[in-house]
Amino acid sequence: MSQIFQHLPLLTYSRRSVIGGALAAGSLFSIGVHAAAGLPQGLFSLGVASGDPEPDSVILWTRLAPQPMEPDGGMPAVPVPVRWEIAEDEAFARISRSGMARAEPHWGHSVHVDARGLRPGRTYFYRFIAGSEASPVGRTRTAPARGAAVDRLRLCFASCQKYEAGFYAAWRHVVEEDPDLILFLGDYIYEGAPSKKDAVRLHRNPEPMDLAGYRVRYATYKLDPLLQAAHHAAPWALTWDDHEVANDYAGALDQGNGDPVAFLRRRAAAYQAYYEHQPLRARPPRGPDMRLYRTLDWGSLAQLQIIDDRQYRGPHACQPPGLVEAHKPYLSKISDCADLYDPARTMLGAAQEKWLDESLGKTTAQWNLLTQQTLMRQTVQHYQDGKAEYSADNWSGYPAARDRIFRRWAEAGTSNPLALGGDIHAFAAADIQNPYRPDGAPIASEFVGGSITSLRPDPDFKSLAATNGLAFAENEVRGYGRLDIDAKGGSVTYRGLADARREDSAISDIARFSLEAGKPGLHVETV
Image 1 (cartoon, rainbow, N blue to C red):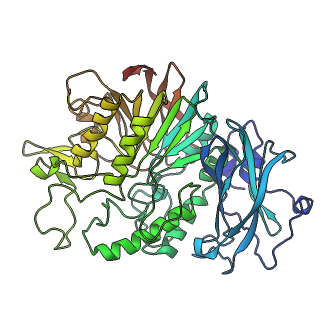
Image 2 (image 1 turned 180 degrees about the vertical axis):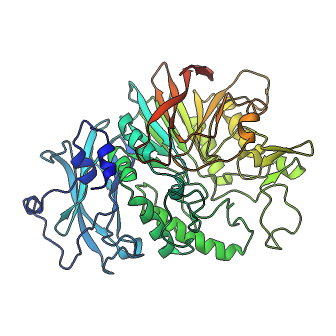
């Protein structure tokens, strides 16, 4: 075992069951599973995961890959039967549900099981068995019953885990938090070519352009034992951002405004690889299309509205005429122009906007968490010749689309809305006002929870914090956010690593904000 395991926490369930997890081969036959002829050893090299919990079900995931750095995982090009079991105890003496699934070669021998018939608000343990091998044991939990009173919710939210930029010490600390749910807000992988600049380790294949390349890139990340441990410890809910496909893409346009047909082929490959490697309740992608937006309820206490602001967004604003036709890279920093404020411009697309409007009107949850990819507040990035410059790639480049969400919160009377985000490789916190009453009391707050490893070398981020209305801004520390809520209120805590370039890095609280139900707005506490 790697020395990394020396630093993993002692949990209420055994370290071996969560991280090592395989049972002795002799015990496999006692549950009546026959070895599949010809299967190589090391089938579960990429670990296991669970996600998108509902009151009576949870998605269980694995991918058979004895040679994970090969595009086919080292598997034969035939379907393979995989047994799954979910139990109330880690010894699997009280198995609640079990069954057989097929690991299909078309889907990279990945397995997505919708384990149904479970009890709400319960902790479960799960595993897979193929051939003569058992997978690591994962721990998961179901959501509380719909509408049920819930004492509390703890979730950790994170994003931006560039493999080359650091080690995954943050995930070791997330496991120690014992969250009910882990929320990942995009940039699970980075697609760029290997680069030694400021790297602690290197991507293991060239920039992916096809399914084979993306599979190898995901395997590079999934092999990390600390990331695996975080998947084994709790259910996840995920959305993507740009680097799961290509930097700063917008809909069918890549960063260089190249051939949309060629880019959509790449997007189709990237979306399939994303599906193959995540515990998603979503249907498999169809070519370059995959519906990822959805809600997740936690009893009567909270609803997560999980959105996708990449797949359906319109082109970047304020670009010179002919830029797309000339296939020139888009301008990432923009100043005011009429196009910027055009109400027809969208981040979410018409269908997703309609779905979100309806969701915000129907939700009865006490807390409503808009789980999205980036910073929502209109923020100046720089001043050039006295003119404010904004990012063309986040909500500041789509202000009308953003303001429609804020107005909907106010019009629908959405209870205790919060926006959780990532992307910007920094921690940030701010109040949100009704666009119709910009000088009025806040209607919500937003929290951007840093990055697991990715850097933001921007000297202006902190100096412009007051100008941008940020109550907190920090871009020199990496880590994650933790949200704790109950019926009366709660808190958001930012956790910062001492050094993300060390796999055994310590961590500390760098900021804390208190929340009070029925009184929108954040309150900065001293840490």
